[in-house]
Structures are given as structure tokens and as C-alpha cells.
Image 1 (cartoon, rainbow, N blue to C red):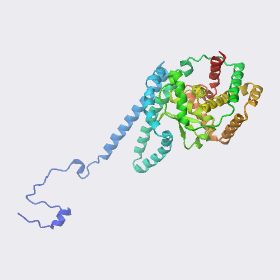
Image 2: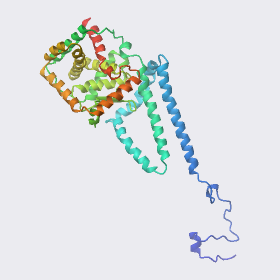
Image 3: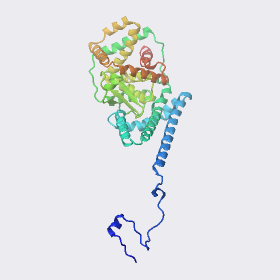
Image 4: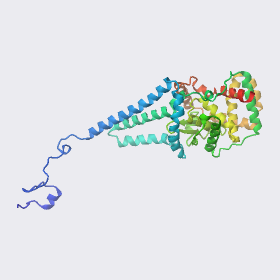
Length: 389
């Protein structure tokens, strides 16, 4: 046997390649990716990842488009979906998000830019990967929007489903309703703002209304305050429903009497009623039907705001006479509300108003943002059927 003429330490460290005549080590050729000049597997994995991302985006976008087309083109699909499929989303995703004590949608809104920056830093040499992540995220959001919001725009209205007898609005009916509203506010003798456990009380008000109207029955997560409400105030937003987390959120900075009504309004969206006129009506009904005195106050204050504005536009003298009869405490609240919104009149609020108008019209609400004020027609129908008859 020949002796190894090279130092053992060097041989062990691999600095010198040595094999004896009787070496029995495996002499099979190296694997393809270990050979000099062999192609890397990284491009292959990258191509597969890209194909997977494209496939995922295609499936998600096809799903979103299919829901939108079915809702718009197939009669009855919106009602079927709202009654049989949407409740599954609400009862699962809505419950999970409801466990979290803060607004999950707000947290995601602030987290996404941070995560995007991190993604860009990590993949700065592979920016296509960042584009893939954004594409998949956008596609997933499109599906969530269609599933938890878009289709519900095409369900039968609440007033028709629940058999509200619609009446033709008239000046006499409007004045009568405003007089009735003023009497309610005068009869309260003043209402002290009480916002303790607002979310829980809003759920109670909506659940009680659900005992009377079956389409409003079932599970409700508590509405949540928007922690950083200032940007929403600057845009003129009092509340927002998030279809991505199935959450009802409200602007905590607005004048107190707005809050119970706003919380119930957003919860009506969560029940699948996306039309703003209908959501206003449901929120108002929940407030005035509640055993909670401050919710009653909120409902009648909002009735005065909407119906009073309609009366002021039609018969200003009649409006001024009724307004002068309101308690000083009510006038003070109304002036506080006006001052709040004057303080937050910005270009952003004008832009948001136009964007919201376009959004509502794109989803079948022909009147756009004017639809909010059309709740007066439903209030007058309620007044005619519940009070006058």
C-alpha cells in the first residue's frame, strides 16, 4: 500500500484532492446542478411561482366577475345570495373579526403600506415578486368585495321585502311628520349624551328590530370606533362598512347624537342592505324602536335633520316656525353639529363626495349621494302607516 505523501491535515481540510489506487469512494458523476456551468434551478422556481400567481389571480377575478354578472343579469340571484350564501360569510369571517376589540379593517389599512415597503426591501432585486404579491392581494380583495358587498346591492329593498306601504310625498305629509318629530324632541325634556357600551347597545337595538323584521334577525358583531377618526372627519365620513372584514365602523369624533344612528346604519349594511336610503331607514327604525332613551333621541334628531332639511327647501317659513319650537338643548346640539362639519370642510371632503357619488351610481343607486336624503320618503311612509292610520 502506498503511503499518502501529502500532509493529512491538508487532505482533511480539502485543500488537496487525493485518491489512492484502492479508494472505494463513490465515483458517480455529480448531479446536473452540481456540474460546472449547469443551469440554476432558481429561474425554474421563479417561472412556476409566476404561473401559480397568474392562475390564482385568474381564479379569483373570474369568481368576482361571475358574482357581479349573476347579480346584475340573473333575476332573483341577489335575493338568493343574500338569504343563503352571504350569511355564511357573515357568520364566519364576521364572527372572527368581531372577536378583535379594535377595527381590524383600520389596522389592515395602516399595515398594508408598511408590509409593502418591507416586501420591496426584501425583494429589491426581484421586484416582479412584489408585483405578484400585489396582484394576488388585489384579486382576493375583489372577491371579498363582490361576496360581501357587491352582490347585495341587487337584492330586493328592505321596504318592499317587509311590506312598507309607500305613499306619495306631499307638503302636508312632510309638515305633519316634522311637527310629530318636533313633539318627540320637546317631550324628551332634554337628553344627556350617553355613549357607554355604544357597540353593545347598537347590537341590542338592531336585534330587537330583527324580532319584528326577519331579514334583520341573527348575529351582529359590535360596531367599532375608528381610532384615528380625523381623516374620516376631513372626508365627511361618519361611518363605513368594511366588506373585507365584515365590520361596521363609526367615526368616534362626530357629534354624539349622530353615533347611535350611525352605528345602526352601518350594521344594516352588515345585514346585506347596501342601499344608503334603506340603511338610513333601518338605522332610524332601530333607534326610535329601541328601549334605549338616548338611541330614541338619536333617531328623532336624525329625523329632524333629514326631514327638516327637506322642509326648509320646500317651505322655509314653516321650517323656521317649527325650529323655533325646539328646546334650547336640541338647538345647541344642532349648532354643535354644524360647527363640527364647517371645521372639517376640505377639498378632501369634496373629492370623497364625488368618489362616493360615482361609486353608488356604479352599483345601481341612480341618485348617488342624494340617496342618503331620500330616506325622508320612507319616513313619511312610516308616518302615514304607523301614526296616521
